[in-house]
Length: 183
Image (tube, rainbow, N blue to C red; front, side, top):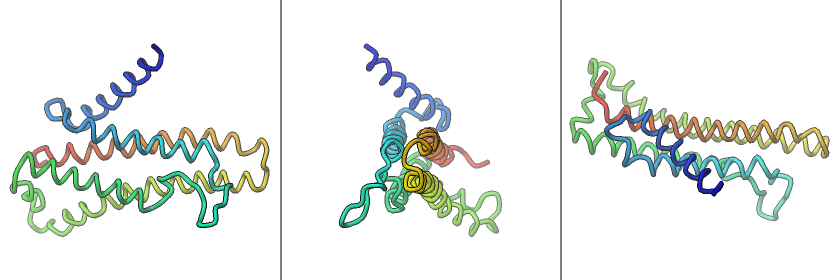
């Protein structure tokens, strides 16, 4: 009974997050996408925060959270970009591209640049925070292996959960923004 309640709570949380960012009328098709992003990032981050994988050296590298790799975070950010372009084009058709010349055509380069900086900021924010957390824990474990790293690991759990929430919230906000009218 407790497991079902937990899963229902998580699903309600994801549904409410998506509804808040995208809007009451159009949020339902996006719940699986936002939920998948949130859960993947959350589980990936926690796998790195709970277990100091960097301590275990392998012949071809080291173990770490998947979100500790820039390739993973860039892929997640590009998926989000594809999703918000799809959402805008699906809702508005080719008139979606009219947003680039709003409020004046002079802003066209800046509006185009904005669509390149969104995935860039999403990926670097997630990558940088997770990498920094894992490096701090790895250094503390190598310097003082017993008790000192434990508080940092708990802080890492909190930070990892917040990063998953931020990524999912921003992804939903970008999708909602692409489907709304111009400002």
